[in-house]
Length: 359
Ligand SMILES: *Cc1c(COP(=O)(O)O)cnc(C)c1O
Figure 1 (cartoon, rainbow, N blue to C red):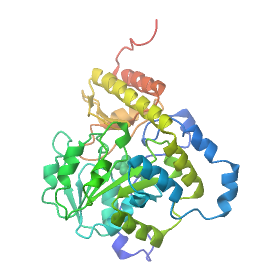
Figure 2: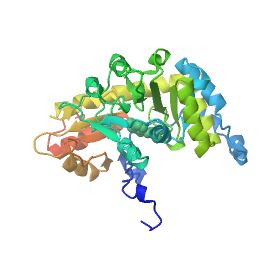
Figure 3: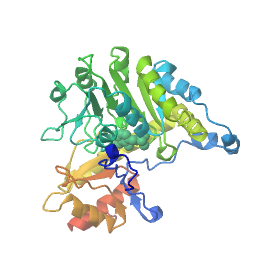
Figure 4: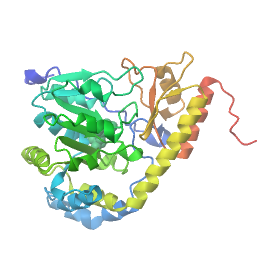
């Protein structure tokens, strides 16, 4: 740290992203919840050499064409959506601009909330998940600050129903921000509630269900006023936060609904498959509505030991060295082949005979 670093930021502990290893070709990479599938063929066609030549020009700061496409899908007005360089950027804007009364979020949830609260000097009320890792909305009844809910939650994978989100919205003086990074894998979106509640903001991403983690594209959907507030932040920080290639890729991805549905259906099937297999091997697997499972080996094997044993077999998953999470690892759902490799490595680690192979 230099002596020039602002005092108020000295205690910020930066977010630690999951490892992005260099030898990714040799590994089965199941640690950062990316899609195992490539972007839609329409995306690959959209980002052509003409688009690259146009990189000499600034992108459209209003993201008009992408806003039209996404707003149609959500059944809202284009003025009700805006975009971030990843949803992380939009979440940062929310902590910066929409938390005048503080913020409230779970003890076990997306790690960035804590970092942003600290970074923007927002007083944070931490609301513990229940013993079984579920979130009880009534625990937020007395919180005055902006409520951040990852739905489904990470790294647990557990989802709330739309009716439970609606309960949180009854106090109209309080803003509720629902982070729907994983909603496309089977959970209820809160977007339909926007027609009834103006104290709701929904944040989403193209990183998980639309195969575009590397393009950095997140969105916010809410009332025209809330979106205007976020645009004040965007235009005061970086009006060109979404680059030209990402604008094209995002629009093409939105328009290819069949590919989107095909990929998420496969992920849901593989999630069910791997959850059953792991439970059959004695694991505790929390009920997931996401593209990952949070799974704990039983019988004296810690999450860390399982993580390391998988790692030595070239399978990379995520382990969290944090209270209540140490018994688990988070496993991204991959292709069927990758899931079979995970199960067979797990049997090897547990010393279980592999009867699944063909004789
Ligand atoms: C992955 C993730 C994000 C961030 O996604 P980006 O759009 O890639 O920045 C936000 N919230 C949760 C809960 C996530 O898991």
